[in-house]
Structures are given as structure tokens and as C-alpha cells.
View 1: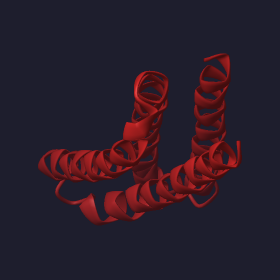
View 2: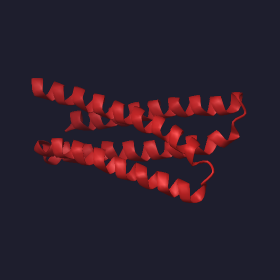
View 3: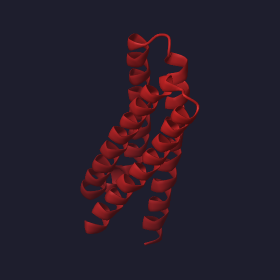
Length: 133
């Protein structure tokens, strides 16, 4: 159980580092080239990524602790839920700022795909390690 908690915390910590790094790069680009219109998409994308990854870490811990045989179902559901939340976020942003939607989608997709790739790699490594034991 403490091992599961450590894995969940490690996922959250790595997610925080990745999102923080992406955010720093995005804000630095906005500052250096005076792209003030880039700041809001970066912040919204960072908040979305942090909320989703924090939720994934917590729900993964609960599923791994209570019913580890359902982890493959969790991975599928997590991916689908993340996609639907991303579509909802993009729609909400479109309703608020129709002019800046192209910029937002470009920034948001960078965060989305990097975090999707990280999640897939992280949990595949965890699954391989648990299969060996």
C-alpha cells in the first residue's frame, strides 16, 4: 500500500515538474517576444494539466489499491475522459475568446500530448515492473 502511495506521489511530482517546465518555457517565450496574448492560453493549459494529472494520480491509487485487476479498464477510461475534458475546455475557451482560439488550441495541444505521452510511459513502466514481480 505504501508502494502504491509512493507511485501515485511520484506521478504527481513528475507531472508538476513537466507542467512547470512547459509553463516556464511558454511564459519565457511570451516575455521575450512580447507575445502577451500567449499568457492566458499557457495558464489555462497548465491548470488543466495539473488538475487532470492530480485526479489521475488519486484515482489510480484508489483503483490499484482496491481492485488492481481493473487497471486496464482505468487506463482506457482515463484516456477517454481526458479527451472529453479537453474538448470541453477548448469549447469553453472558444465561447469566451473566439479570436484567440487558434493560439489556444496550439498551446493546449502541446500540453495535452506531452502529458498524454508522459502518462502512457509512466504507467507502462509501472505495469512492466509489477508484471516482473
